[in-house]
Structures are given as C-alpha cells and as structure tokens.
Image 1 (tube, one colour):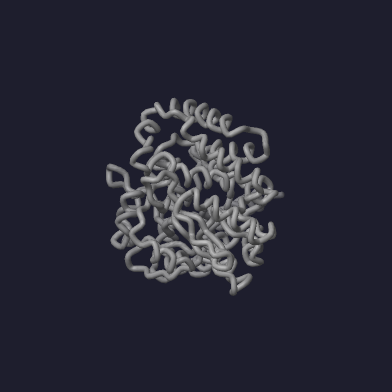
Image 2 (cartoon, rainbow, N blue to C red):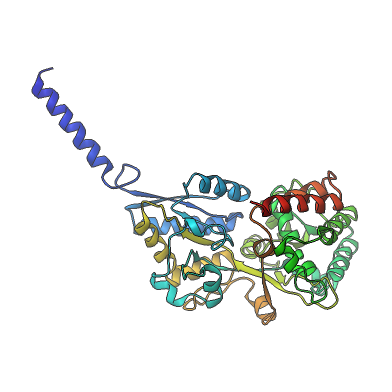
Length: 416
C-alpha cells in the first residue's frame, strides 16, 4: 500500500470515529441517560416505561436506559455511591436529604418548583435550601383491604391493632379458611420490612404514654420494647392468619389473588388498586391508616416521598436529565404519573384522580407520620428489618432474637 493510500484510510477512519461519537454517550448520535427507580410492582414499572418511551419519541436525541432493581435497589445504590458512579437519574426513596444529598444536583432553580407542594418541599429541601429531588408522587401508606370481603363479613376497617387481629380471625372463620386474612409477598423482604416499619410508629412513637423517639435518636433505646411486633407476626403465622407461603410468595401474585377474592388485607398500596380493577372490575379495594396500638393513640398515615428522581451531581448530561424532569413535571404528564401509580401528586397545579381518592378523602385530617426507619434509625436498618421477618416466619428466629438482632444492627450502624 502506498503512502497516499495509507494517509487516506487513516483520515477516513478518524472522520468515521468522530462522526459516530460526536458528543453522545452511545455512539449513534444519542445521549444515553441511565435511570434507576425503586418501582417494584408491574403496574408502576409499566407507567414508568410508558412515560420514558413517550419522552424518547419527543426527544429522539436522548435515550433513557431505565432499570428497576426492586429488592436489590439499596444494595446497588450503596455500591454506586461508594464508587461515585450514581446513575444520571435515581430515586432517593425517602432519603433525599440524609443519605443522597451529597450525590444530588440542586434542582431549586427549575420552573416546576413554583408549584411544589409545601409539605413535599420541606421533605426534599435541606437546611441550605438545596432541593435534592423531583417528587413523582406522595406516599400515604396504611393497610389495603378487599372491601367486598369486609362488607360480606360485616367487618369495619380496624382502628386498633386488637381490632385488626380480630378482623383477621373473622376472615379466616367466615371464609372457612378459603381466604387469606393477611397476605405477605415475603420473597421480597421489604414486605416484612413494611410491616415492621409501619407498625413501629404506633408502637414506639405516636402514643403519648409510649413514645421512644428521643431514646431511638440518642442511642439509649431498649429494644425489648420492639418485641411486641415480632410476637404478633409469629402469632398471626401460628394461627394461620398469614398465607402459608409468606416467606416465598412474590408480590406479583397478589393482584390476581385479590381479583379472585382470595385475600383480605395486604401491606401494599398505590397502583395495586388499578391493577386489580383491570383483572376484575367487580372487586373494590379500600385503604385505611395504620391502626393504633396503645389506648391513648389514634390511627395515622405513614407518608413522605414515594417515587422521586434526583440528578447525579457528577452526571455528564445534567441538561438532558433536567429536560426529562421538566417533561414529567408538565401537568398532563405529572397527572398521568400520579394516576398511573394511584398515589397523590406533589404539584399544586395538578389535579390527579386516583383509585383510592375516596378513601383518602374519608380520612382527611388524619395525621401523617414519617417513615419510622427514615426518622429514627441509622441508614442500613431496612435490610435487617425485613430479613428478620423472613427468619421469624420461617422459624429460624424467635421474637426475642429478632429484637436482639435489631439491637445489634442498630448499635453497629449508629457508630458508622
């Protein structure tokens, strides 16, 4: 090959490389954004995928690689934080100011913030005024129930834990054992975590005579006070009030079971109502606040962030990531997201109608408490909270051992 031909080939190769790469991340003329969400159930993931797809159609120069690690989200996030390799867009799932703030871009100068619900603004903004994430929706967690079954069996939504236990036993008795009183998809340990986390609030925080918030924060909490919750879970299991496969069942199974009137109570909310309605329009689900445990207390919602999106401060494509958040903050898209996940929206210029709206209105004025682990426990306690539930129901731990394990993990993590 002569020298001129060699130079020509080299020039063409260089031109091809420059043309292919340009300023994009994936070599085909597009900027590739990575997005990681905590959405676990199929319906929530589908609305995410639908919105992402519609954004990509309107913005063909941007490709979003969206992932849903479900039960593995926290571990994956910890690995990425340690490596300073956060996705361009990621869910702060209740830890926007405490766990993720050093990794997030400030969003306070974006136009949609003018319409941000004040309650959510206070949760997402740190003491410096930095807004750490965009809230896709708000959480109002309690207990979801099959209204058809409760009406059939003459059961009023329970307001106390004792009434809850009675309701479960009534379901078992009146259904002849054909209906699961309290269903848990415990192959995902977060289902057990949800049980402990939600009921820890009435057990340890909201009762005037049994409030341990200060002790939890200063490290002096006596974890024997926690044993009530694993004792009650063990009692439910021993009495056949849980599904027999509570440790191995998958959350994706429950919509079909609810649609067949085979389950009465669950620890899931959001889009589960819409999902069941699509399977069987004749089945209506209801939702209620978390029952009180002590006599001097009342039911409460557990709330705060549900799905959010933060932008990594180290992202190479912050403008493109902001473009996506601007897109989903448009009233029509924000409404679609809120209704698709069946949870309240977080913007004042959006009027979303969701599946459980009548029930939220019914309990208007009920206090909203923050998630127990976010407010009172060190980062990392969610995993042992769920794992001990799995071990308890499988028979590998006693209630006392659960509390001991929680004490050990609390002591270890609080020192970090």
